[in-house]
Length: 219
Ligand code: SF4
Ligand code: SF4
Image 1 (cartoon, helix red, strand yellow):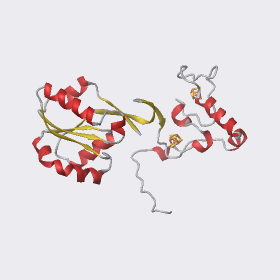
Image 2 (cartoon, rainbow, N blue to C red):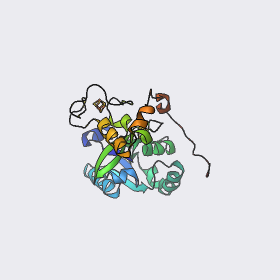
Image 3 (cartoon, rainbow, N blue to C red):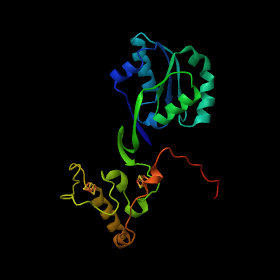
């Protein structure tokens, strides 16, 4: 999932100070799981805006904010309320916000969230970065993502700096290669790892902006 957090209220206040009326758009996918795009987040923002003397012309929660055609269809029902507003506030990740920018080119669109990373939810509302979308997944070989969880993205084993199993960059954390080797050991495949040592990584597969068209069914 894409992890997002609410912008600090002072920053948001600064961004929207020149506008007086707003339409709010949330997202029922990742942003709802992060509590940054669900109904509660929308109603809290609405309440705060109204307390600040601003007008909220309406709001809705997109089913999947990054799905451009679906969101276009959903949002068309709110055209009059959006026209009535000076500005749209998005409660989604950056992709969801850019859907709205694309659909309303002549209207100011302000994201109320900062988008952080691709992550997993460990406990309720606690997220960990797990994948940097590097374009060439090594998990079959390493078990855990050394590209993401090693601050140096070491591909061939630990760097020389790890000490007592801890990462030299962040001694609070275990060196991810210790975890990787314990997974390889428990699978009994350490030898085959040495045979298929990784790297150098082809970072051109991770260079932005990227496009991708999914294969036809069955291919
Ligand atoms: S190897 Fe690349 S694609 Fe696979 S989890 Fe790590 S960053 Fe993501
Ligand atoms: S100690 Fe381990 S996790 Fe930390 S930078 Fe070196 S290889 Fe990466």
